[in-house]
Length: 375
Image 1 (cartoon, helix red, strand yellow):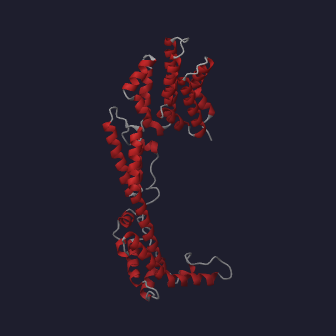
Image 2: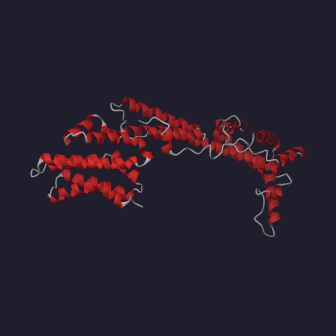
Image 3: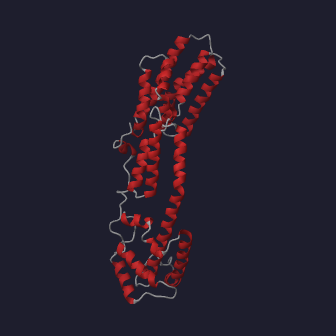
């Protein structure tokens, strides 16, 4: 649903009145038309967005307040019947009110705390008693308008790094750290400490495009060996006494349920070794990795060392033994089956130091803002 109409009226009321003044005066200049166009954009965004804070931020960051006010000033200047001084005073008052309304809205949402300082400085400049032309001149010279238009993404990048770190996504963390370094470099090179919006967007997209193939490859390798481990575990478990009661093989119910269950078990015993061999061949062809390579690969070590791997280290070592004899037509000996039974009954196959959902859940962004320097 759109932004609350009552709040939109509060924010846009001044601009609507200014636009109506131009229409009532019969001002059909290009500058007046630009005012109407900017106002139309602000009205459209109010219908497209549903969060008041995000809407107010969008108007400020996109420079729509400034664009309207600048065009309005030029439109008034083209109308010789209007006194210039009084128009400037009114324009300054209208512009300041719009910025103050936006500032108050931003302050009401802790998630926008990092956006407030530059808008606060614009408001203070407007309250300093400057005429409207001098206000525009000083804001431009001090880079305040650039600050409003510039992406305030420093804290969000740091938040992304933090989220990737606590969820153990090393490639994502590396990518966001590269973005952070690039962002800081742009800030350092800027005369006002604000990166150019277009330059930052190009830089960000370039970094993400560079990392995307590596991220896809990481996930693809991870998914393949994960399934291969399951296949080895399923095969040895299918020979155990608990197999007919295990959900991996149980039939859907009905009079033929038992028969279907035994058929499922037989299929695993007879077909899984051959299917695993095919998967291993594809795994090596696509990724240049063998079964033995899995256990030293960064994707596996990342899961094992950070508690993401479902299987315990003991279960993994047992799988390596099972894999050696897992061939079409083969069957584990009684000792191996007994070990599989014991592992299953004691649930020793489950890793005990797995990371919990609570440990991997990030703090809310407003809380995170309190821990970083975003000024």
